[in-house]
Amino acid sequence: MSLKDVIDKGDKVLLYCNGKKFLVSVEPGRVLHTHIGMINLDEIIGKRYGDLITTHIGERVYLLRPNLADYVLNVKRRTQIVYPKDIGIILLLGRVGPGSIVVEGGSGSGALTGVLAYMVRPNGKVFSYEVREEFLKLAKRNVEKLGVSDYVIFKHKDITKGIDERNIDTIILDIAAPWLVVEHAAKALKGGGYFISLSPTVDQVEKTVGELRKYNFIDISVLETFVRYWKIKEGESRPLTFMVGHTEFIVFARKVFEIEG
Ligand SMILES: C[S@@+](CC[C@H](N)C(=O)[O-])C[C@H]1O[C@@H](n2cnc3c(N)ncnc32)[C@H](O)[C@@H]1O
Image: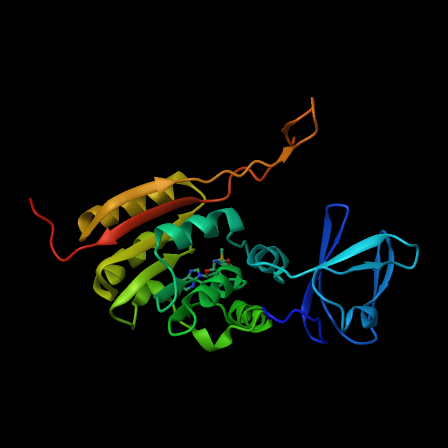
């Protein structure tokens, strides 16, 4: 994501019109057809983020800088992705930040990988394991689009067979059988390091927590996140009817060197 104030060719811009958003890459000569008319992307080059343009039928469109949730929700996806609501708490409770060394399994569409890479800059690294070559390629392309490829090492490997890296700060698993990685995670994490896994069903969570209890993990917690948007209008304010319901249960645990008793 570029931090320039003036929009140039190749930049990503979020077009905002009456609550609707379109994420576009500014390619010279490209004309975007939308339900509110055509937008000539040549017109955007040289404008500032925050400027207003109009479509060919006079509808007003604001030019905004995309954020990381826009990246996640707009990645070309061929797998389930981690939703922004879940990524937020993973970063916070998993202590992912500048300099973090993170192991991820699997890369999938690279939605989470891109955000992790963005967060660990300028001196951290993400090692992302993926078994399926087609998803590895897709994840690489999506991470490239975000401009953070330098911070990711993609590995075409089955993470249940072992983790090559040591002294890892945080391991994040979005795979069907995270419990098969617990033993490897116990060896790869540094003292106090974080194990995080995402699973859609509770039987997966029970198996994972069962394994965490066998190895040197403490502070085990399991949570779900819910985000409910509201309509605000005097006298009519209320939650919106539809929301993202269930995505994943998230397991958090921390590795220690020995457990007493
Ligand atoms: C739900 S997707 C991950 C989506 C990703 N977190 C995202 O936000 O785009 C799960 C991915 O894990 C991969 N996978 C499953 N088992 C794996 C394993 N043992 N080692 C590495 N990758 C694995 C699958 O091929 C799939 O691409």
